[in-house]
Length: 303
Length: 297
Image (tube, rainbow over all chains, first blue to last red; front, side):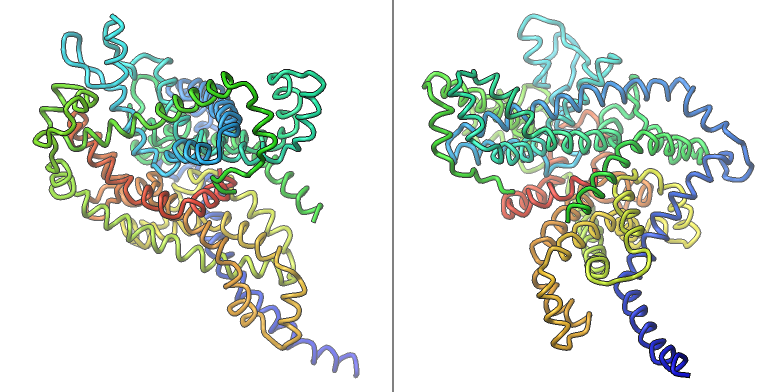
């Protein structure tokens, strides 16, 4: 009897507790389930259906995603983007972070602001900014694009910079680097300030040169931050489509996986192929997803 | 994490010993900073030049007679804001970005509190899923979402875009808020409970006011993210002129008037005005917000 009584007493309390939890966490879980989780799972389902989302076609869409000539170009470009874009953004950010750390306080703050400024600009806006820098006009006419103006003043013929695959991808990567170096620079600069000066001073007193101090002491000390920044940039690069969309609209062999996904799904209305390309993109991100989760669990364990 | 430099005079003195080396560092940084500014400067200058001027000479040539005010014009802005629809798009961008920031903040603050201070089944697993979802590309959700919105007759409406942005922004928001609220001293939350405050009272009276800094950081990040977004706008607002946001309108302008640099430069600068204003007025929160948001990738 007493047991029953206890249970009866407890029940309402447990229920109000549960209700309270639902009140706080419920709205978020519903929104996430409907607008993020369900669509994500559904995309996987669609990737095995035909382009109308009706008949089952097995791995046909994946065969397309992995062998179509446009997709192969996209893969090649993504490799270039990842290799050049990541290295350039991280190393340039680190270099600038190190240099501005040696300036006076005011000069440091101002130069950091200037480099961080493009972070405020959209990829679309930045693409217009740089399309103008790359503007091309036939020989004999006034060059209004800065790059061609410099190039022709050195005695060369004007170039249509964005037409020549695969080099044109490098010109597009410049836009990304210009936008994102501010981010790597600010984060790495903060990490640099955390390097104990006893370490670097001791090395200098032992006769180490500035390069040695940098590569043997500073870089290893801030390695974990460098890795975090690098994964962030890699994920960012894999998602870039706007730069391609605005500057070349995917022509001249500049397509990447993310822009191919949009083209297949929303320009050509091939939902099956688009879904398969989206899954390919997810698979490319997956290793970093695992890294992020592992990092999260480590942080949690330390709490 | 602010842009201000920490003061460590000793190290600075030692590190920049030789005057020649110090000068070299200054010169290199100056060069980089100028390089970084040039593209936007060219855009800004060109946006005030007439069509013929832009096509006849480079923008840098206008600087040789910068104070000849007859060459500058506001006509490009007039045309772009009016007949090219950027004025309307500016309003649309606000209509999209404000609710797309407020809704996730509200929903995620509740959830952040729940995840931080309430015990319930599956809390850990659900939160791990949240961390994973932060990195999943939005592309994964677009096709079914579009079908859903078309089915509900919501496609091409602001409402659909608010919902989509809320969904895409929530994992990051919950992650940031939960970590922040969870780092508040346990004794503080518990003393409130001892005083008989319900979770809701504790949340409204105590947690919400204390969380203003993280809310500001996330809100700025989310607002700029939405303002600068092309992906969601393209998929759910594409096609209809009257609901187009700035990024969408600008990208269409590139397609239709690719050689009309007088319009493109003015149009591009209009899209930048608000983010730049945020940057200059709230620089500290701006930097914090963007760094915090970088987890989203």
